[in-house]
Image 1 (cartoon, helix red, strand yellow):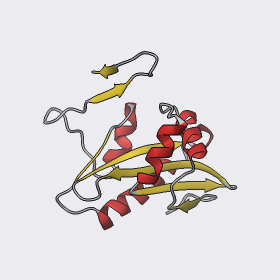
Image 2 (tube, one colour; image 1 turned 120 degrees about the horizontal axis):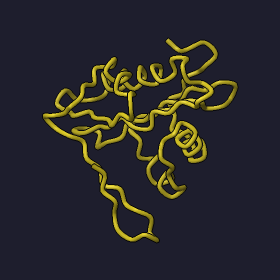
Image 3 (cartoon, one colour; image 1 turned 180 degrees about the horizontal axis):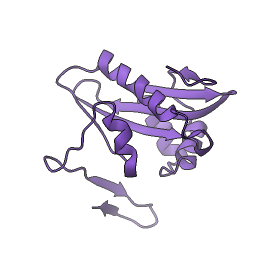
Image 4 (cartoon, helix red, strand yellow; image 1 turned 180 degrees about the vertical axis):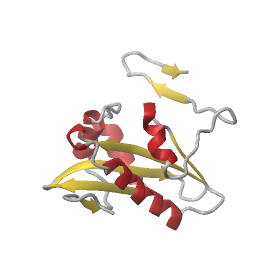
Length: 149
C-alpha cells in the first residue's frame, strides 16, 4: 500500500537525487564519481515521489545470484514518520521474494534503531553468529584506509 500523496517508481535515482537524499537523511555523503559508478549497477531501486520530488529511496545491490545487500534506505526528514521507510522496504521485500534464489544471502547494515524496521521484513540480527565489519577508504589526501570497529 502506497502512502497517500506518494507514487512509487522502480527506477534508479539520478546522481543528484541520490546524493541529496543520502545527505539529507543523515547518511554518509558519496562523491559524484562514486555515485556515477555505483548507481547503474543496482539490481533493484525504488523511489517514492511527492509533487514531482523524490522524497525516499532504497536499492538492492549484489551479484544477482548468491549475495544481495539492501542499501540506501533514505527518507527526507520532512517526510519521515509517514510510513515511507516501510513502503520502500515493502517494494524491496517484494523484489527479494520474486527474484532472489532461495540459497542466496541477503544482508543489510542498520543504523541506530533502524534495525527495528528491518525486523518487520524478516531480517534478524546476526551477532554473535556473525558480526558486520567495514573497511572505509579515507580521502586521497589522507592516504590509506580507516577501519571501524
